[in-house]
Image (cartoon, rainbow, N blue to C red; front, top):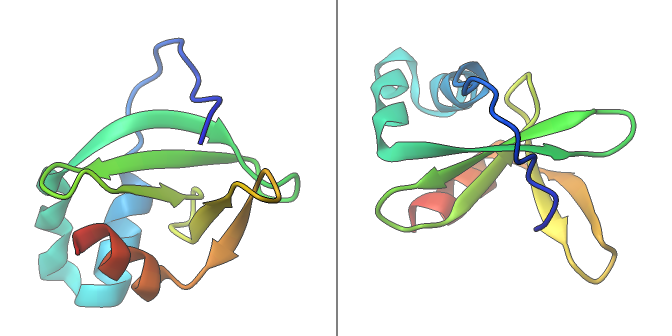
Length: 94
């Protein structure tokens, strides 16, 4: 995964909050404390920027659009593609 924008912009936590709330309920919103905000990357043309978060314990990264939908980087195709948010969260936590 390359191209994380180096210029400073405030962290955007709302997509992560949305994803956690959707999968685990409103109490899971506090789980955002277990993540670091890494930055923004260019996503698919029809989606725009993705937000990259890293779990502090597993060091696995999670890419979300502004609505909280998950994406995975496919290096063989050199692009991000949408994946199931539940699957993405499990992979991030394990």
